Image (cartoon, rainbow, N blue to C red):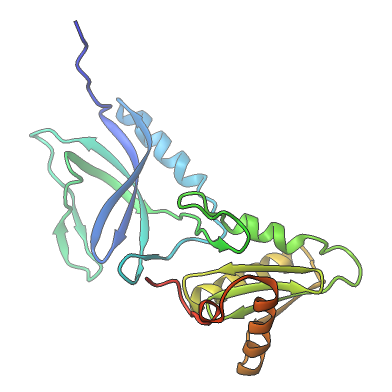
Length: 230
């Protein structure tokens, strides 16, 4: 006789919120006791150390996204959804998450990922800022090995005579945010051979177009793009 499947009663899940819509992303923990789910919820929150949090997604245009961690419970007839305040301060009944009721929810950070020139960059396998930092520190402790880090529209370029790396971000704001984050990390690590130039001027943009052309097989029309918006 086959056993009937019964889902675990409690879960810790990752959610995304975009344009007021909540979307389930994945389950981080599942169990059958309320004590265990609360303990693991707090452990997962405490371990949430992110260097460069994702703040937007490309979905029919660039949209602001927020991630949440939540405790959910299989809904029973006696369960009453929580009363919460929305972004405008209005008290509302929290929507159910399918057949689950939300017991607790809080902000959670997810690492942003990037398209890096020369890597496979398959969907779901794109590198995060850790890979960018690896490119940044190559030879950084060598004397007379100065690298420029410069923003060209939605692209962050790491460049000197012996190295070229290009990180493609969603737009200019995201490229600038990455530039500033890397600058803070470099300062903390005392990497003095890195020159953070900031956002390229009009004259510098033209020069960097030539650098990108010389180091990639991209057509100029692709280099001109200023965002990854579909």
